[in-house]
Amino acid sequence: MKITGFEAMTLAVPEDEPLANMPEEAGRTRPVVALRLRTDAGIEGIAVTFYGGKMTGSLRVAVEELAALTISEDPLRIEAVIAKLVNGTGDSCGPGGIFTLALSAIDIALWDIKGKALEQPLWKLLGGHRDRVPTYASGALRRGLTDDQAQLAAQTLVDKGFTEMKTQMALPGNPAPADEERRVRVIRDVIGPDIKLMCDINQRWRPEQAIDLGHRVEDVGLFWLEDVTAHDDYQGLARVTAALKTPIAGGEYVWGIKPFRQMLEARSVDIVMVDILRAGGVTPWMKIAGMAEAFNLPIVSHVMPEILVHLVAACPNGLTVEYMPWMIPLYKETPVIEDGHLVLPSGPGLGLEFDEKALAGFRA
Image 1 (spheres, rainbow, N blue to C red):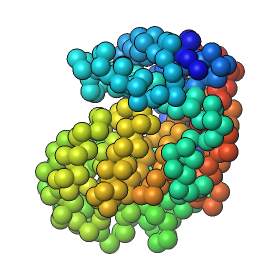
Image 2: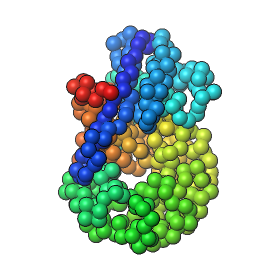
Image 3: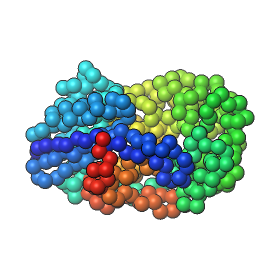
Image 4: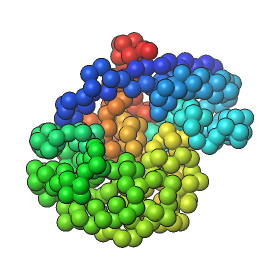
């Protein structure tokens, strides 16, 4: 089997918040690049990539240029294809940024092809540790909401059957510590003690702030505090992790494999979070998961649950899947949630199929 062609398209996907229907900026969209990678066997691998922002046009060109280098290659030899792309371009313009975001799309599409060719879902090809995994609602309990809105959103998530959910601190403006504290407490008051509650900081605190505020909310029983300070301040993160009883999660902003070694050796985090696009695709994501397992640490996903459910389910140290449904509208069907768990699809590869009508409506 050989790769014979490809198609990349730029999409503008609506930034709706469908989990709790909290107010969003009307008409706002997220720029996305979708890829189809075609073979002479009639098998097509699909993928999406984003984070390009105002440079999404450049990202699409990068996807097309890398895809062109795969023509005539055997899509089942994924490491060989990726090595060709890295050796041809990544040595000089990687490892982060547009190159890695484009490489991720190629890698994901290759794994989709492999699963379809072997008639196996991706999660089984990668290890098949579980056929369902816990998932948590993400994106609904944003820092821009009022306390009343946050409580309403939290109750909506509980009513929908979520047993895990994530909120945010580092509130807008320059809030006093008591105001930061209040946000997680009003949500805990609504959801009760048994719901797992995570809290994202999005790198907005200094280490000493994280330690102070982390101590203030320890009795809330947070499942983790996430990205409490700059992602590459491995020593600062380690100070916070050592100081707090609450587990510290981090890694979504880290590019490629090698920085995770530094993060793990510095004991920067208790829970390793990996973004599949910034990591470089399925292949490096699973390698990072193995590295985390060697350090006796769990691994969790960042966005794209329809794809990352396969990876978290495949590895023994997979903990939970972030249910951030940004890309869900692109597909005909996506994995269902039952009793707070995502059920793994039985279809080959990613088990996903683009919704052609949706793609036509989102074309930018």
